[in-house]
Length: 223
Figure 1 (cartoon, helix red, strand yellow):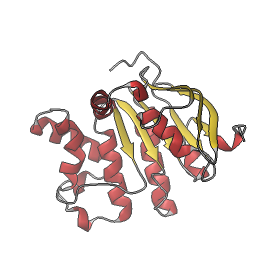
Figure 2: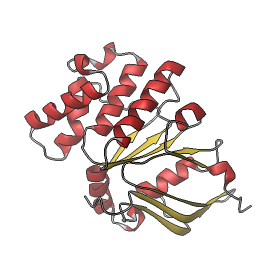
Figure 3: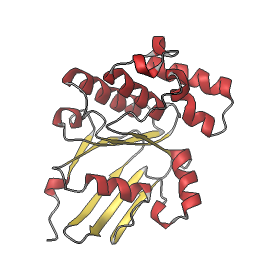
Figure 4: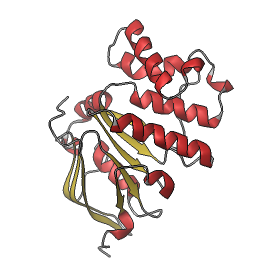
């Protein structure tokens, strides 16, 4: 991992669609930084995430993770880069029900080829960091919504380094759990100089936890 490069770079990116245009959007995220992406529905939050994942090439501008424009890579190379360097937390936890809490958390490491015992040891530490150490052996069906989302956060943070893209991770949670999940994400990234966080949210209280806020409602419209 090239932690010497900027973690996230979006430079004057624009995408034009049949009925709207998104951009120009520009911002950077350094290592150890947390940035909230806010704006009303349809303002382009999902488009920014698609630029960064390489799922959509901007019509103009540059979108890069760790100096790499994923939209210019082959499907195989992009998939490998994402697996090794990018973690995600979505509105739904997207956990695997056939695995318990510990196995779900360790899964990214095991996909990276880490030995099972080492992966489980790291997963246990990460679960403790998010306050779920005592639930490692639990069946997912016994968890509350807030607990399930914290498992998803632990899975995103189980690698010691990388970029975390969190897309409305607190939208389905009550106020107390939203604050807890948001603070867990921000605290775990801001104390690690090898991580960076971009968090898309409608929740201004969660956005305020981040170092900076990028408001897409302030981006001048092209149409």
